[in-house]
Image (cartoon, rainbow, N blue to C red; front, side, top):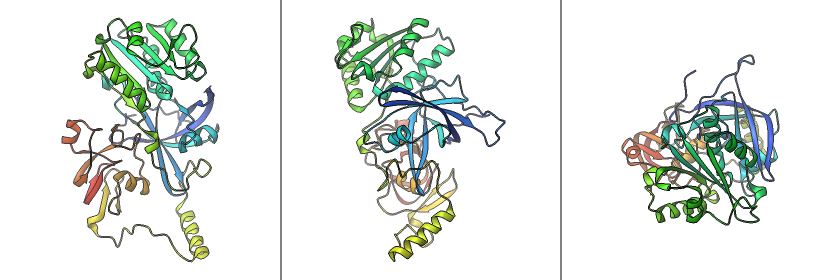
Length: 386
């Protein structure tokens, strides 16, 4: 089985076979990779630290959401997602409140370059995690322990509000005893005697590593946490070439379909027949139809071609590539939806895509024709590699 690339992520069916409560608002979902043939157990090749994009639906509208795998690729037939329930989150509440054992999810992936193989860290690694940002680091940690790696010395610092909010506490302490790993917890409130108290600081860094300049630093967490990490490292004159980050971005900036709720989401798209029936019922009951882009009458100047899925759709001026792709039922891995993280990047094969910023892209990616679908707006006829 060939490994899918991040440019052409594979399509997978995942069946929920177990659910574990990690904290009062965090669950791990154990998902078996399914095949169309029940007697086959397929494997899913991915790298430790990569993410998967779940494909959920509000009737015919796609609602994709990306989550980092917390499992290790050394166990490729069973993957896990560890998800914190956000009181305002659409998909996290659906997963936490609605998903049950036996449910199946459509997914695309793997994706992302925040992984041990792409980063190629130095011998000493410092993993810094805040809250649910522990997931990619946990995937890396489990992987290094599974392969009994002696190439790296790992320092693992996890920050949480209280001891009750600490995810994977028992497992990380066990791994620390069995392997060459230093584990410490930073607790904002009610810290226990063996924990660091307060918030991450330069003093905490210095108490837990002898010389930060010998390390590759791999942080992941919410935006304020990431800002704090970078501020501390710059204060310590750390060489940021050895800093590689994964960030959730500002979750408040994510957009969801109108009237969407965890109760209205489903794990599959409604059928074409259902669409026609529901649209007909809407016309009869309300006496009018909603306006949809007309791919046959719109000018070809406002068409976009998605090459990988061989789909051509019309768009309205001002729509982003992500909005157009989602409307067309094409899953695009997304995260911050602000043009910062680079998760949603795709290659523009022809035409013009306008972006106000390109912080989520490297100069090499820009020169290679990559664009950020979450903020990129097509101008004229465009072809995108999705």
